[in-house]
Image (tube, rainbow, N blue to C red; front, side, top):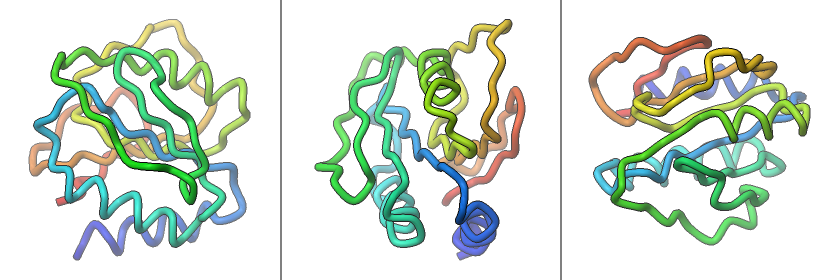
Amino acid sequence: MRWQRELLKIMQNNKDKKLALVIDTSSKQTDHEVVENVIKFVGEMNPEATLVQADFKIRSIDKIKEAKGIKYFSHGKSSYTEVFEWANEQEIETVLYVTDVTGFLYEELEVKPYVYWLIPDQYKPKVPFGKLLNVV
C-alpha cells in the first residue's frame, strides 16, 4: 500500500495541473493488474487526466475516463521521445509514465513536464530525470 500513499500525494499536489498517464505497451511482461490499478487510481483522483498508450510511437490518446483498455505488444521496442514531444505541445504539466525505463530518449529533447516514472517492479533503475516510484 506504500505506492498508493505516494501516488495519492503526487495526485493531490498536481490536482490543478494538466496531467497525462502514459502506459508503455512495448512488452506483455508488465504486470497488467498493477497497471490497471494505477489507471483506476489516477482516474478516480483526476477523471480529466489523459491516458496515453505508447511503445516506440504513440498508439492512442484518450481521456482516462473514456479509455477502452490497454493493448500490449511483444516486440520490446520503446521510445519516450514522441510522448514527450506530444506532452510539450499539449502543455502537459505532469506525466506519470508506467514503464521499465528501457526505452530510447533523444538526448537533445527538452522535456517540459515534471515526470514521475512508475515502475511496475521491485528494481530501481536509473531514471534520466524526474522521480522514480515503484508501484508493486
